[in-house]
Image (cartoon, rainbow, N blue to C red; front, top):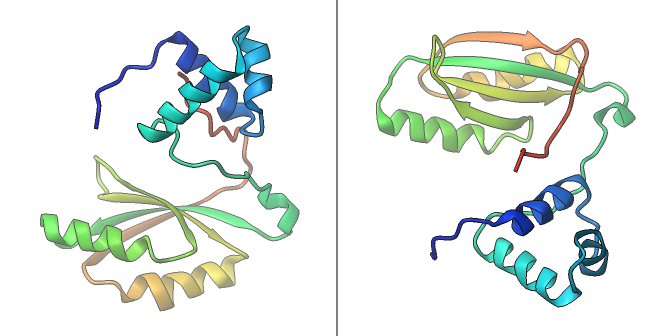
Length: 155
């Protein structure tokens, strides 16, 4: 893969697309005072090099009524590289797990988990997550309110 450092125009394109991925090449060109062709080439290069990994629609979880978000901290009983790798593979299979981070501190992993309600969360913990090997200490933090939800990285 070629080594590439985005210039300011690339960064501007990334910032705009993070806020609204529906912008057309023509609209991007108008905003950035460039022609459509170089914008299209730049976007394609940013995709090819992995700076743009996917284009998605963000859904408002509140539109689905009951939706509980929980941050689950996990300490494993075994700290081998293979155990960490297997744990990450297994939790990635659960639809309830939106994000999984290997972390420093008192816990090995932090998971962002979504469930319809407390009964569904308990079912997830008991019947899915609890069946995994090497699970030690767990700490659940339930989200009461969300003050900010941002997906755009500062570029």
